[in-house]
Image (cartoon, rainbow, N blue to C red):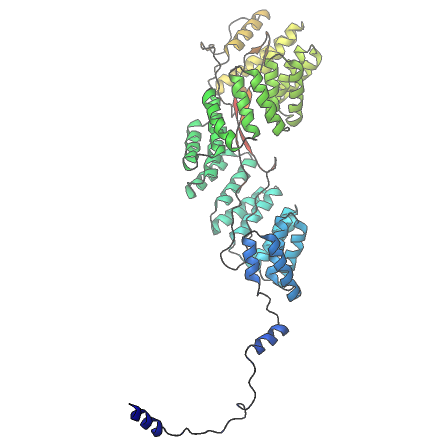
Length: 532
């Protein structure tokens, strides 16, 4: 073996020596020198974008801002992604104007990017500059004509400008591009703002067909059916919502309101206990609990719950209405006057409030102001015969028989109209009072009203199409109370739902949604209960 190795070593041919070229004679550059020199001359703008993105999606905003500051110093303020994320953080912190300025900088750095313009428009929307936001969204639409968010957000801006036709057009365009639950919800809200419940129900039915497990849509549809008095469908949709989410407090509150409407106060209170664990500070919840106690004739407990609801929502006229009603029942007329006056300030177009105020004034021995209140109630409410009956009783007790007779005859006309439109059963004690008044006025005891109900227990039914559908027993000897009100679940704020991105891109701009205001957000479907 050793000889073989020696033989191979001696048999190797000598290597040919080629002359070296001029380029090979140049000294070689050290490895990495070229990259370092180029990076010093042309800094890489995006080299820390991954770190910025990582801190942002982890919501570590302080560390994110520190990296952004370092990146902007190195790039002399030319890193678009760093500016973009800085603007998002400013918006989350509530600095909308600063975020707008930074997004405008991004739009200057990259004028062909629709995302930058969408963020500029969103900041303008949050600042309340809806017309300016529409102009920017139109510019973004020219760059990207297939983006459903742009059409959706344009529709929301038009809603705030009360241009509902244009809003519907944009929202339909958004649905044509890409169907989303949020777009259906906003389209339904437009019809609710226009007072067209039937079209709103049609939109929500389509939305439920598209997304049958969305509890927000199911609950809203159930509330709309509840508002129209279609209890079977309301119960069906609310039950479906609770099937998918047994802890959905809005559906539970609405279901409890339905039970309360039909007089099942104990069952309703059981439902409300579940809701109280989820939202203990809900004004509609404590309002409904209070009216359950009112139906059970536990007036002190009712006032306690209603006072808590009033503390949580001092501008809710229904709570003030119920407080006035309970105080009238307890013959605390000064307190009733206080709450009813406050309710009238918030709801000046409701005739029944003026009628209850007149009842309180009558018992406070102020007949002149009571007459003025009755006159205003008659002017506002053209359907409720209870107003005319109470007014006739007051005039009769004051010795004004001609005026009492006129009001009595007007009451009979309204009763005829109600009987022709629907089959109603008027309260037995109210019929008895009308018969006594008719005999006293010598207009005969035979009335055209339906026969009194034998069961004198309180019957609870909702009134959705006409306020005159529910009539109360008289208060004391001559006056009758109005209906009590309970609120079903409030429409919650729409889900915004977007998380961090999984790859290195700009966080998406979310679709706009109106803030919960009284005008743009019909936030309660009230189930009005008749109490004895």
